[in-house]
Structure formats: structure tokens, C-alpha cells
Image (cartoon, rainbow, N blue to C red):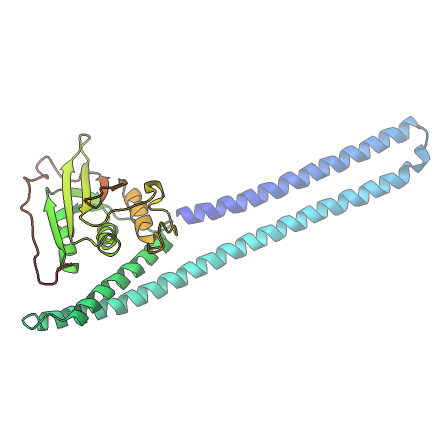
Length: 315
């Protein structure tokens, strides 16, 4: 059973408990009041002849109160169920729309990359580079939106993944960016989620830090896990680090909405990892992650030679 379905059932159960508790309390109050009036009537106290009118008034007021509580509980149950169905429909629509848009955007990205390969020997085209950059940024935003919708109910498939393969994919997406790697390893992660984590971190470095270099360092920690560090030479972060990764929090006027780093935090957590953000100013921004190690003792190879991509017009 998914987390979202469990949450919906808990909400319905709480509504039911509230109705049962309030109706039971009102019924107990009514029965207690009627018994007190009956006791006074038996004792034949002064003014007991007027108790019949009070008895009828208490009976009517108690009955109306109980009926009102039951009606309010049923209305609350109805609106809770309707809101849950509406929320599910919105999520399904948004997921379908995002998936279709992502498919069309992937086709556009492939065509743009084909144009770049066709004109590889020609003069650099700033318009084509901008098209590829904007396409990648829009594709990442759609991917984040899809993850944001499915975070609570999406299924993760954890498998052994080589980090060097993911870094090579980053170099393919940012050919003008210098991306170096030291160390390597195999971690247990979801391939699509790990790609989104690394892509968001690099996009954050390029867009907000104006970085021209990104370094990826892999080391084995003492408990058999792998430590993954992603750093850059950008402007760094000047603000409250504890608020980084919170949804829709703008730290400065020109900062983003926080969706990217929020997705990074949530995805790393879902893959049984941990992450910390550090301002490494003046040397840039640093993200430190920790993942389960899927390799053997030989999975950490000697330090890998740095890969340097130097092209004209490098950011």
C-alpha cells in the first residue's frame, strides 16, 4: 500500500473517530441530564411540577445536538473524500501532462544535438548552444515536476550503479563545463533518481553559482558506505544553509524557487542516503552525500585521472 493511500485512510479514520467521540459525548450528556431530571421528579422537590417542561426541552435540545453532530461528521467525511479524489485527479493529470511534454522535449533535444553534430566542424553557434541549454533546463524542470508529484507514491528501484557512468552523462549534457572526477564506486540507487540528483546539483552550480568547474569526489566511508562530494568554483551560497532544500523558499531576489534542491534532498533520502549542503566560499558550493555501497572491496579503484573538457566559449 502506498504512503498516499495510507495517509488518506488515516484522515478518514480520524474523521470517523471524531464523529463517534462527539456523538458519544453528546449522548452521554443527554442521558445524564434526563436521569438527573428523573431523580428530581422522584424526590418531589419544590417546583417539580414544572420538570416535565424541562424534560421535553432537554430531550429536544440533546436530540438536535446529536443530529447536528452526525450531519456535520457526514459532511466532513464527504468533503474529505471529495478533496482526496480531486487531489488524485490533479496529480494524475499533471503527471500525464508532464510525461507528454517531456517526450516532446526529448525529441526536440535530440534534434538540437543532431544539429550540433552536423555543424561540429563549423563555427560555434551561440544560438544553437543557447537552444541546447534552454532545452536541458526545461527538461530538468519537467523532470523535477514529475518527481514532485510522485514523491509520496512513486516506486524506487534500487540497483548497483557506477558513478563514473553518471558523471560521463553530465559531461555529455554540459560539454562546455569542466567536470573532473576523483575516485569511483558502485552504489545502490535508483538510476533515474540519481541522474536527477546530479543534474540538479550541476544545474544549480551553473545557473546560480556561475561556476565554470565542477568536481566530483568519491570516497569510502568507515561504515562501508560511499561518500560522494559535488563541489564547484562558483560564487557559493550566502544565506541560511538550514533553509536550503526547503520548498518554495527564496533566499535572494534572484534565487530560484528551491524546487531543485528540495527534490535532491527528498530523492537522496528515498535512496537511503544522506546529504548536507556547505558554503565553501570563496571556492564555491559543496554538496556532501552518503550512499550504500553496492560494490566489493575492489569497487573503489585508484584515483581516476581527471577529465578535462576544454572548449572555446567555456562558461
